Image 1 (cartoon, rainbow, N blue to C red):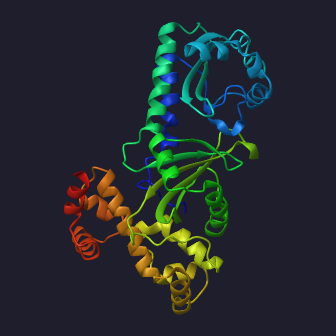
Image 2 (cartoon, rainbow, N blue to C red; image 1 turned 180 degrees about the vertical axis):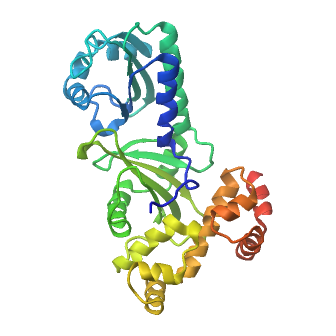
Length: 361
């Protein structure tokens, strides 16, 4: 049974459906490539979406084709260019040289001089200036979703397969720099924690952890994707939010893998209010012994940790989602609206409604 993450994150990467769907419906595009690249040396892990582009053609273009891509050069000068796949060195591997092709570039800025890149093809009819304008608007909308998240204090980061930053939203990058967060060290720890908590961790799964970064607890929602089936294409998408002191316990690698796996399970299934018996059975340890083991390694009891996670998620939903409080109570695993309200007041010193109103000020 797969974990449910419907209320964990806005899921920026999932909005690729909006981009590809609109391009197909309105502009009759049959292939779409999107990424944020250094045009002079694009890399496979900088590609975010490769929808119906043949893998062989992408690999060829990455290795050498971009150097002879006349449309890319034109788009770098003007922001957009249209022509044929042959002119852009995209022909072959099931893409006819005569196929109409459009290229859009949006500069992201200094120091890497990265550009958001959108490449689209269709079966017939050249791309017009109106088509290029429409494609540029679609690309700008998608980039704006990344660079200007609606949540305050949200840092979005794309990390490449060698743990380098591909891109971060501007306000998020400013926070990372001010907090002096070492992302290389974070990635090293994260990979160990992921292996411990989710031994069967797979691409396109969303999980979350809480680490101490820059001396403060930070909630990190993680997802690994690959635009193409290749180790070199590995790309990580993070959404990072600073937390209040005491809101959640920052926990990294723990001494016992069984406790690590239960931590992953709780984060995935907090909305099911897992009991001590359920989580101890998960790792084949008696409830009594697991309670002692978990409490010693994590610093609180399993029941209290589940409750902290539920209240933490409820606070995020109250701040960021216009959902009825009864719905938030249900989605975070509370038996009733009344139980949620009384527990929230006991732990936060105010009602959910008061917390929401305070957050809106």
